[in-house]
Every structure is written in C-alpha cells, then in structure tokens.
Image (cartoon, rainbow, N blue to C red; front, side):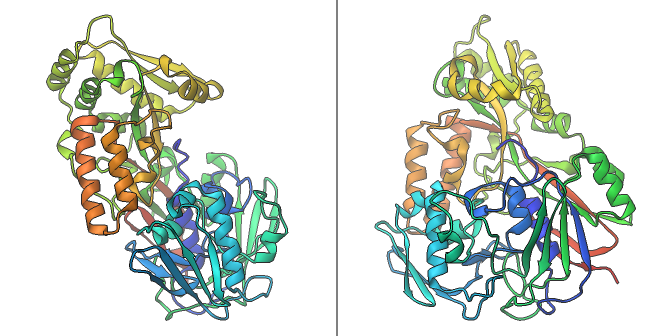
Length: 518
C-alpha cells in the first residue's frame, strides 16, 4: 500500500535483466552487480508480498506453473499445458518433463502439490478464490484442483498474485512446520541461490542444469526460453541514495532499481546511462465511509469535483516523467483497464464542488479532516494541495498529522478522528483484490451495490460479461458512490550503466533484453 516504490516494476526490471532473451540457457558469463532499495527480510516469496524479495528470486530462482507474457496473456511455465472443465470447477495441469531443481531432483507432481497447497493456505486471496480446495496429484506429471464453485481466474491468480505461487521441492516444504519459512532457497529457474551476507549482499549463480523450453528468442514477459547471461549476480543494499548514485557513476553497480526525482535528473539525457520507467502505484484519497462528514456521498462527490490531479501530482513528484494522470482504477497494462466514469476524474471544478457541499447541507462549523503521516512527504504534499483547494471554496479542511508509530492505530481503530487519508496501491490481478474496495479495511466500502457486483465478477463464468460489469461498476463509483479519489499513477525508475544494453519499457512492467555490452 504505502508507496514503497519497489513494486512489480522494480522486481521485473531486475528479473528480466538477469534472464534476458534468446540464446542458450547459459550464455555470456561475467558478473552483474545490482543496487537494491532495501534488503529483504527473507526470500520465501510464497509467504510474503514483499516486492523486494520477489525482485531477487522470482523468475530467476523460482518459477510458476503459468506466467504472464509481455502483453498480459497467460502462457505455460512449469506446466506445458492446462485444461479447464466446462464449469471451470476443475483445473488440470500437465507438467513439463525433465525439469530439475537446483538440488538435482526432478520436479514432479508431489512437489507441485506441496508447493501450490502451501501457497493456497498462506494467501488469503487464493484460498478465497478456490473456496478452500487443494491440489492433488493425478500421476507423476499431472496435477489438478477441484473446486465446488468454478472460477475463471485461477491462472491469473497464480501468474500475477504478489504472494508468489512458486514451485519448490516437497522435501524443502516438509522440513519446516506449518506457516514457517523455508530454510533452503531451491527452485527451478536459470539462477540458483548461492549466499546471503546480512546487510551486504545476496548472490545468485547461473544454474548449469537449467532446462529452457520453447524456441530461443521466444522469451516473453515471465515465460519462454530463458537465458542466464551472467555467471554471478550480486544484489547489494547500499542504504542511501548518494551511495547508489555514486556507485552507478563509477561502475561499482551496473544497475539500480530505484531513482528518486533528483537522481532521475542526474542521469536523464546522459548517453552513458539508461533510465527505465514504468508505472508503480496509484495514490488515492480514501474516504471514511463509516461515519463523519465523508459518510455522505454528496460530500465525497464534492471533494472529487474540486481536486486538480495535475497540480496535486506535480506538487508531490515534481517531474512529469514520474507520474501519469488517468481515471482507471486498474493500471494501463491490465486487461481490466477502463476509462468508464472519466468525466468525473480530475474535474478541477470549484463551482460544482461548492454546489455539492451546499446540497449536502455543509455549514461553516463543519470540518473535513485528512489523516496524514508526517514521514511520507509525497502524501503530505498531496494533502496540503487538497486542503488549499477546499479552503479556496470556503470549506474548512484540517490535516490530522501523526508519526508512523501512531498513524496506523488512528486510521484503523479511531475512525471518529478523521474523514479521509491518503495512501497508494500497486497493480492487482483482479478488481476485487483492490484493498480500497474492501468492506472491512479502513475506509469501509460497505456500499451494497459495489460489494454485490464485485462478488458477481469473482464468481462469473464469462470473461466478457465480467469486464462489462467492472466497467459499469467503475462508472457507478465515479458518478455516485465515490469510495475514493484517484489522483493518478506513479512511475518507478531505475538506471543501468553502459555495461548493460537492451532495455525498454512495456506498459506497467519493465522488459529488458539485457546482456553485457560488446
């Protein structure tokens, strides 16, 4: 949620740099040094949504049954094919033969069953989607899951959920208790885990036993023919921007996964460096819909009407290269992207806003309170812009500021103290996974129409109908309910030196045909 600016973007940035496109399974050799914006707590990506952990090991060390291509189409990964029953209640996966784990064992159905069931038990979104069903082995190279109620989206969940559905040896899972983190980082990818020196680096090495699949050059998104371009990959944790910038400039690091605004300007336009940018998160104003002045939809519509998203985004990020302004609640690269309701986005209409406040019976004694964290500068700047916009039409607005240690408690447990707060959200596989539409999370989106439509989308059996339902629901949310005010989307930027070539951007993710420069 909080803009950790180290999301799917950064993760993909590094992953695709490591595995490259085409060629043999192990091509060039040499060492790649990457500066990370932070250090993972652990590398058990099936048990966490920490993007920085996935940045190191998903796709490079670990793989999944299915993956997303560059254009967000589902493609085989460790499963060579799959089948769905007529009612979408049974998913059957046929596994690739001869896939080796980094410990030399061949991947078989028992490993997939253990891994997928552990993922289902750990990931609430996955467990809810399958209704508590679990995978079983049909034979050594076939697995299936049988659900009481069918779903269209299991493969999307496997391919795209931030809590990763990676496959590891059953023996590794059996060696730990329920809910415990695995001790051995063993997967099937082109790189094997080598070592981790706390507060210094994580090292991966090319796995000579990797079994590529597909035709050379067919790599797309997260799947296809992968190449380990480097003998060794090191992830470092410099700890501050100045060290990262200096390290890139001197060649100590080949790539950094995050640039702030000032650092972006340092490298922009310099032919010795390549900047990668793509969408990372969506900052939003989340209304308190359970009590207080924002429980009135007219007040929420009024605030939506007054907001100037262009001014707000510029005030917090400064450089237009670091953000985009558009209406969709789902990212541009998503199959669920829609501009429905966009007439109500970025209105910058003080007259309409004032009229809606008057219609709501707003009085001079009423106050609109925005809860803010003192340590998150971009959110604080956005709150200040909204405050000035509301004061400009005669509406009293106060910022209720807390430090990090108190903020979450006030937000979650003292809704009487605030009317809205600002946070941001990363990409989601399905619309109903957006936390800001949850009836139980802070903001409390209990609108019966929203909840019933989300449930219908989740249980639908026709994808076109589900997309149409989401489009109509987004229009309703913009035009009537207004659970949130979306500002835009942030851009995550990284940089590489001239020692690395072949970087480009595709929609919300970074895709890199990267290898050592000649």
